[in-house]
Image 1 (cartoon, helix red, strand yellow):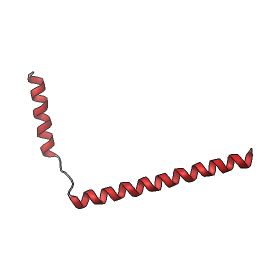
Image 2 (tube, one colour):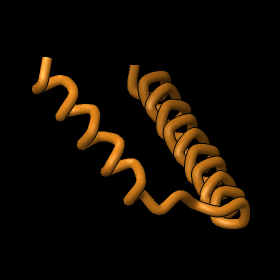
Image 3 (cartoon, one colour):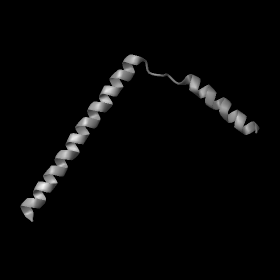
Image 4 (cartoon, helix red, strand yellow):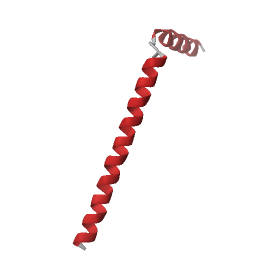
Length: 59
């Protein structure tokens, strides 16, 4: 029981040390993630289309 208590005490102590992002940083990071996801989606879509077209040409 003492180990569990000690564990959660350590967790609480670490959570207090975390630097949480403010609203401006969170907005900026959210936009970056959405743009990155969009461009990755477009990239993989184009690769898929190119592969399909190449299969049609060579078959």
